[in-house]
Image (tube, rainbow, N blue to C red; front, side):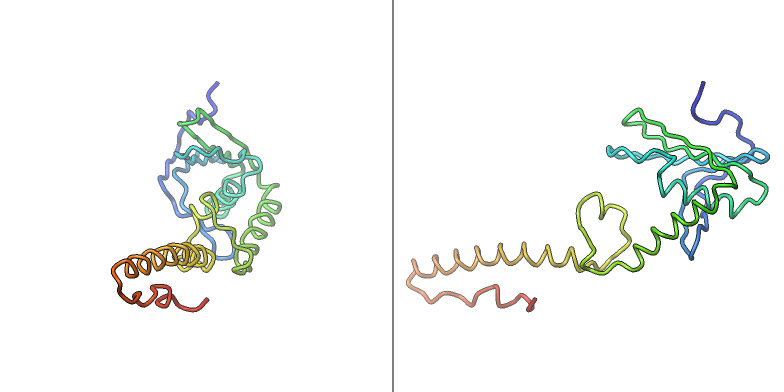
Length: 178
């Protein structure tokens, strides 16, 4: 038996789904047949996604489908990871909407109320972050620049000394104060 839908009905590619609190998302595909909907989201990376029954992104997509299509009674969310040979699916019903909404609202609230001290920059956290001016990344970049410039200042000073010249103005002085 196939884990993916075989009866298609209406196929909507990359719809914008309004979820909650002004949050929206674009899912790869929604298929609607009568009172049933299937959400297909292809994940092309190498990191395995959470199972569809606990995946907050999947719950947000499901909620968005319920919001957009009042006739839909069930939404089956499918995450397909072809590189891993992995498919995870879960069927949500209208009875799940309140729990889904609370979970998505909690995630939105946590992100919205985050302060720079809460940021944990790393590849997996930053990959889908929409923040364009991140103080946590700026701090890391500043520290890297300081280490590089200290070494370069030391090298330039040593080279000047070998030539019998005064050392140049330290590059570190060009960095803003922390």
